[in-house]
Image 1 (spheres, rainbow, N blue to C red):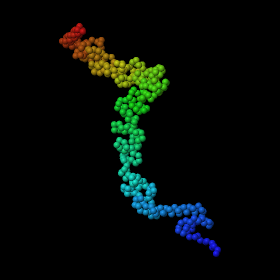
Image 2: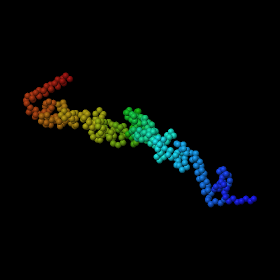
Image 3: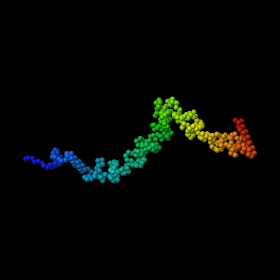
Image 4: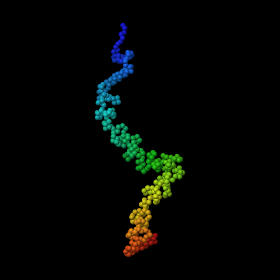
Length: 387
């Protein structure tokens, strides 16, 4: 008999794919019947169907990590790093509350909200008092944020550079060396920040190890005797050839005005009073035992004290009656008339009395004074003979 044309799709054929009797796909060619939809749209619909089919199978076998129960098709599911949870099961292991904004911290396979994690496990910073999340610096028997662990002097961050303990403080290496050098009475090199055990080389007012520098002229390694000239360092022989005067105070070259005093040459600002350290700036100075003094401090230290006012005598000194007097203080003790060494006067109770006041004194008193003066002269003569 003749074959009849097939007007309906056989059982199991759908969208150009023929399925076997048992639901499986059969390896048969796609239907060549005309379609109104494009092949691309047909393929997309097939892929969406396949994904939904596999997802449904996967969810049918999935269980919640916390309660181990399955999921309903319309239920919202939380996926955390591949682990599935019911929305109400995805909670903090300590307070059993849902995580704000989904933020949680995991420790030993348990999840915690930020507050409970800090209270249970996070250390407190010794500097700011806040909880430390992330990198922790353990030092000085305390915990620190990396940016909070700073040098106690210069506030430099120590987290990545190391530190040194100094009198209960945590210091960076340069500050530690400076503190140690200060306690030992030594300088700290401004280049390597190590203590200078010997005499330092002073360059631009800062101390250095001499072996950090070389002579700008001959290239030899410098010593502490090196000289600075126009921001360059020279060894002593090279500098001496230049004929530059050296300051008697700082031992550095003098490039400007020179003060010649006490057999040396000085910077103007370095020629100062040995007592108050103020520059003389052209004013008169007084020398004593190799030191220079201003007039005020020279008189205070080495000057005469007036017998009358008990002040240091500034200026001319009147020596009379074996005492020193200011010119204004040397006067008659009776009438206060000013006296000079050219005037005639008499001593009465270690004080001068002018001739006029002496003549007005009682005759008996004048005789006693004359006799005492005569006896005093005799004693001086006898002392001269004994010598």
